[in-house]
Image 1: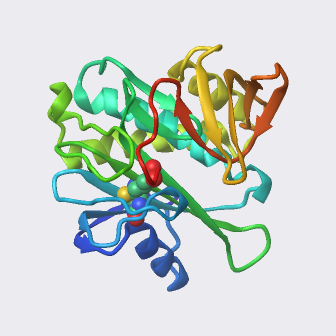
Image 2: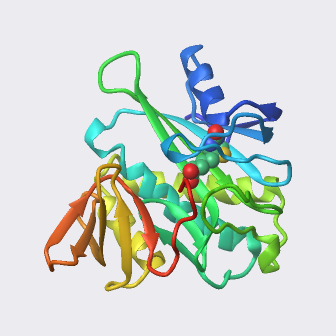
Length: 254
Ligand code: BTN
């Protein structure tokens, strides 16, 4: 069986996600963690840039899987749970205020301390999906150009090196990928995600790209969609969007 913890560390990469897809095209079987000490073209969600100075963790897991395409988006929630657990493990103690915001932002209080960029392509044959789960964890510094509040672990008194963070993350990701089992174990992921997220009834607004919907958090559905009660009292189910928590207005450009 392939070593699930195999990793390579590059002094510099454009983007570890891009590097992972390049290696997959060249025949890399995975699983493989690709880590860069710094990125010159770090990518965030929705085409945003991800500032990537040395000292933080920039890592992508290349994982081939024979899973139905319809469940691949659940990797996003799974990775969020793994990151929250890995941060607590690597910090050696619970980090107050550490929580998830749908779909996979990792916050300390209302400030972002880690981001996840899951991407996938169809593999060469049959059902194979080539998944690349990119994860950035702010350990010693945080970007100031995100358009919203950000923070890092040092700021909260936790000293964690990129290598220690990767070790904890690789263990948590492996264990949650096994539980998830191509979606058959998603209910456990969902329950864990909810345990790390805000409370039912929390006010938030979601920018879907077409509209901004304000409402209150109701639940995650059985597939991982966000269920929100809008201002008219109607339940809305969302599979894509940028969530802003109430009282945390995005700055220009967010
Ligand atoms: C987000 O916008 O929240 C997602 C940020 C994801 C950043 C990580 S850093 C490692 C990997 N390589 C990238 O270019 N992006 C992801």
